[in-house]
Every structure is written in C-alpha cells, then in structure tokens.
Image: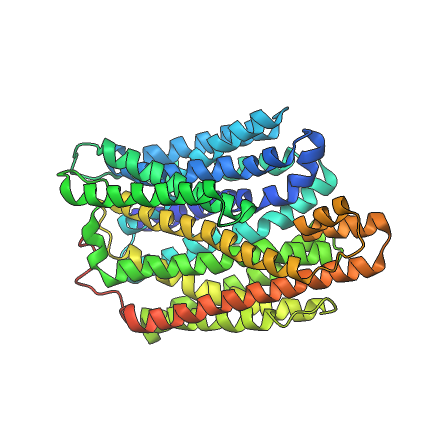
Length: 500
C-alpha cells in the first residue's frame, strides 16, 4: 500500500493534470470562435457571451467555493467540481444552439471556480516548507501551461475533427483527476465549523461580478461608456461594503488579518501583476501570427511552444534559486526577465522572423516561470490548513480580476494605437468601420477589396499597436521589480507561516 509521503505527490500530479483542462478552456475558445460563429449561427454578442458567461460565474463563486471546501471538505468539493466540469464539457461539445453553449459555459465556470482554489488549497495541507514550494512550482506550471497549449491542441483538433472535440478534450483530464483524488487523497476540512457569512458571500460575489463585467464591457465599448462606469463603480462600492462587513461580523468569509502579512499581501499583488501582463501577451500574440503573418490556428499554437519551454525552464531554475537567493530576489529576477522579454518584443516589425519572436517569447516565459509560482508560494505559506480554501480563493480572485483588467486595459491601448495608425481615406464608410473593429476584420476588408496597400497598412498599424502594448506590459514588469524589492520579504517569514 502506498504511504502518505508518496500518495500526496501522486495527488498533486493528478490535480496538476486536471488543471491543464482549465487552462485549455481559457484559450481554446478563442481559436474556436470563427467556427462556432458559422456552425451555431452565433452573432457577435453571443460569441462574446461564450467567454463572458464562464468568466462571470468564475469571478462570482471563487470565494464561496473556497469557504465551502474549508467547511464541508476539500476532497468532497474537488470531486464535485470535477464531475461538474466533465458534465459541462460534454454539454458544451453537444450544444446545438448559442443559448445552450452559453449556459454550459456558465456551468463550466462553476466547476472551475471550485477546482482552481481548492486544488491550490490542499498544498499547505499536504506539504510544508521547501516541499510546499516545490509543490507550488508544479501546480503553477500546470496552471500556466494549459493556457498556451490550448491554441496548439485546439488548432489541431479543429483542423481534423468537429468543433465539439475541443471540449471533449477535457474528459481524459477530468477522469484521471477523479480516480486519483477518490483513491489517494485524504479528506481535509476546517475544524472550526463557524456560521456561513451569507451577506459576505452575496456582497463579494455581486461585487466581483460587477467589476469583472464592467471591465469586460470596457474592452469592447470603451472606458467612458455609462454602463461601464456604473458597473465598475457599483462593484467597487459592493466590495468596499464587503470589506467593512468582514471587519464587523463575528464569522467573516475571509480573514482580513491575512493582509497584515507582507508575504501574503505582496505575494498576491505581485502574482496579480504577472497575470495582468501574461493575459495581455496571450491576447495579442495569436492575432500577430494569424492576421499579420497569415498562419493558421495550428501553426499559431505551435509558435507558442517557446512560451512553454520558457515556463518550464523558469520554474525549474526557480526551485533552486529560492534556496540560494531567497523569495524576494527570485521574484525580482522573474520580473526582470519579463521586462526584458516584453521590451524586446516591442521591437517587433511586420517583417520580423519567427526566430526573433521565439527569442523574446522564451525570455518572457522564463520570467513567468520564475515570478508567478514564487509569488504565489509566498502568499500560500501564510495560510493555515484551517483556512487554506478561502485564502487560496482570495489569491485566485485577485488574479482573475487582474487578468480581466489586463485584457481590457492592454486591449484598449492596442486598439487605440491600431485605429490611429489606419489610413482609411477614400474607403467606403462600411468598409472603413469594419477595418477599425479589429486587425482580423481589417485584413478581411483588404482581401475583399484586393488592396495590397490597405493590407500593408492594417498589418503595420496592428504591429505598432502591439509594440505599444508590449511597452506598457514591460512597464508593469518594471513596477513589479520595484514593488518586489521594496515590499516582499526576502524569505517567507517562519513566524508568519500558518498563522492565519
């Protein structure tokens, strides 16, 4: 019979394998959207809601999911989440209308809302010290690797099979996770069965949904739109009420004392900054390869392999570097590589070779592999087994909102620069309006009009916008370096660990 020392690493391996499905699901949809528009006769609004329904449910339920895991058992909730994720994947694969796919994507988001924080929350339960750091490296690498792998595997599946296959791909990961967790993982829960903070659950969920929805709309409608400002303002007010309530109630949803720990506070903030920059990269690079270079979905996915290689190298080096240089220096090195890679990427031209792209994408991947797992481990080390579910969910909620802001803010920078670079004089009004919407639409208009001049202009304007956006990302990474050196403890304080 396998002893606990061995079993826990198998549990981590199974959870990491299952997490790949969540990462796939975040990016594979982008590859499948053109096909879904045709096959399901979906309009632009419905295409947006395929992603939004998932993201909004995920944002709403992260904190309640962590609380329920702490209260009723993390193993039980993880098994439920995997079953839900698997059933929703089946539902997505066999959806025969946009409405059904939107609903199934919402259920998929519900499964992910439990799966992500609770898979992370078992790390401080099963591991401690250097072993926990190593376990976090494995968990975070799996969490990140699924994102660039989505376009690769999704592109290949769409080329050879029906569109539903991109969702059926989740099932082997789900089944493996179910079997391993059911057989190998011990149950764990908080020993303090406090009352459920229903008001806190409602306020935090509604606040996160309102902020996330407002940010999503901002990327599409602009930051000055009335509905965007109202949604974000309402979300901020609700979250402020939530924080006030947590300070007053006897049974809070989250322990605000966590934020007294520099390791937790700045570990979570720095992980959020990494997510901000990372989602910006993943948003633009596929567009560059497809619209500017004319490469298909599979080829685009394959050109993201250097990011995965960099991630693996960064995570591998990180484990040894933390021991020698400490958490602070390791995260700072990560942000340095991020800044260097992104600044190099900002030199991209329409005629740049793949070898140049591979170089800076790899450097960026190394930065991600160094910074993100170490920053998250710094925050995780403060959590006790009692409250690891809610604490992990809080870290994930901050990252989720940070990623949404990253896509919206960086998308605004990209779109503004792209539109300013377009030369549309003399074009029919309808064609000009279409070209302004996105680089993909601009390329389609140029092809339809058989205008080489317009095609060159559209691609050049996009690359200029992408370069501007990458400079902004590099600036975020430089802020990350400064914040790390000033605020993050050199090593996770032993007095802080397990205090929450």
